[in-house]
Image 1 (tube, rainbow, N blue to C red):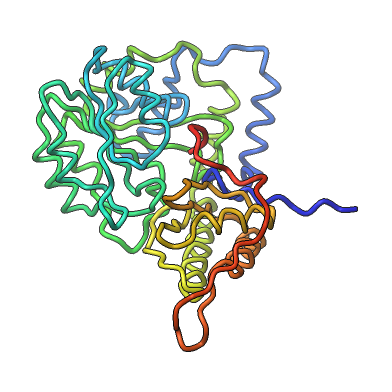
Image 2 (cartoon, rainbow, N blue to C red):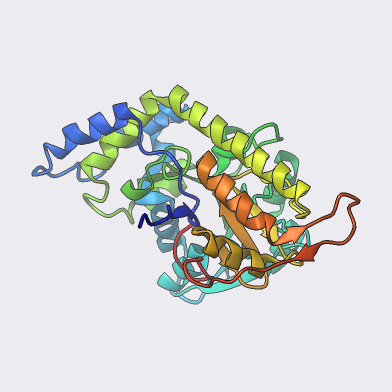
Length: 359
């Protein structure tokens, strides 16, 4: 008997494997796997700097964006000092704070699932060394606009480094995105964090980078692990930069599927707010726990935060259709739009519950 396909929509991965040109570059690098990579990733740093149109002294490369974030905390945080971030958010933030013996300070999201910038500012004190913004936000997909971000940065004390996590920035379209280069020129306490894991489909290879002022970048680089970026990953990133047009078309497809999911879920009675990442966010009081069970029964993995919400990564059209079919059985409106009925199916195995893994 054939086993039904398992649809992986839990970890915000790309539904697409590396491009053929990228795979060829990786294969060439594998042939030299007996050779060490560069002690520090200077060539890759220069390539990324040219691509971002900044000088190389403004770029730091690390083992995924989470690796760069750890290097930042190691550079600027002493044991017992505070790291402030919105919560719920990316699971790694409190883990990274613990790794440098910092005090994590979670600040609740606003009722509409946005990062509460006023509450984050109010949480800063003399012992705070880092405040984190995730934009677009993980897991809700909400966006801090350019004006709101500029006003926030102007109010952050200079002794606090702002870690602006833009892991999903390529998926934010038709919005008012921040002008990152301009912000970097005016805020030497800002580090912009980006990754090749999401839009570029290289999650397994672990390459991310940060953009910041030269003095801040120099401090972060001192925490860099020698030989920390392998040659296969370096080759894949360089080839991906050459294929930016092809990759943008892939992102366009993901965005189109995200909007289709959003529209279809609204039609099914779910209260879905606009999102700007590669996922959709189903929030309580909608029946998210029942939705998780329904997805599990349909062999669709999603990221489930019991009692809070459910994040559904945008996958292939087949995977998205499987998710929609499963969720149709959870919440139904009749044609008059009257109150919905819920029909939670059986099944409890396979859905990703809340735990500190993934992204």
